[in-house]
Image 1 (cartoon, rainbow, N blue to C red):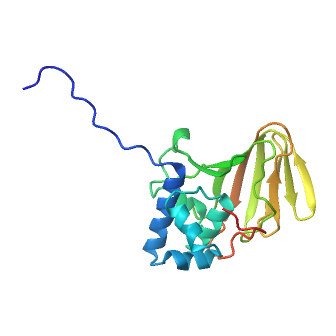
Image 2 (image 1 turned 45 degrees about the vertical axis):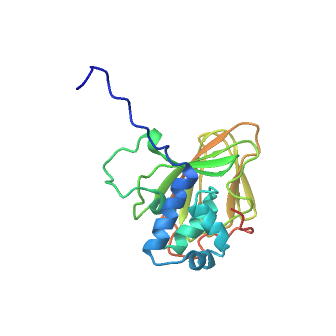
Image 3 (image 1 turned 120 degrees about the vertical axis):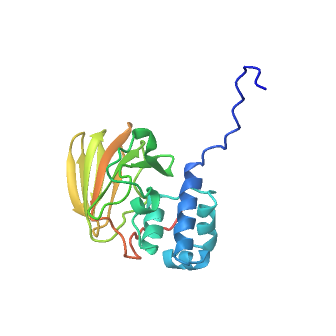
Length: 211
């Protein structure tokens, strides 16, 4: 019989960390394709232990690592990271998926799931941060970036461009490129890729293969 007091809340399981969430998605996508850890690792040119660490949430992979894994699975990063829900549902700011590449570089995916034409994300670079350690190429897509705040340095092949707030630029993803924050303030950029780079198992080709 109730004594009028409210029942205590049942203990709640802690929310999965970003690394755990990414790892679960990689593991599910790999298993659904009948691939072993070793097979996926060989397709990505990573070690099996690296893939295992990602799946167990031990490490949070960089975006270039995610691109390589997603491409090997025949997916885009947005498809790998997003829920399979209606396109006609708002994606609230608090629901955006955050991909931490390094303490100086992280990204927020702005698409709930990939469309056939584009994927969009916000890139945040702290002073000294860069989109990748070296220039990369992935697929043959058109990329567009808009500087929302700060001053960014965009490298495209042998050319170097300084982009100020509200400046924008387009380039092909098949041309070696990266973006760097050489300033002493945070840089925020809106990034659009069309079409999403996928299917190509050499989707992202950095000089190094660090996670």
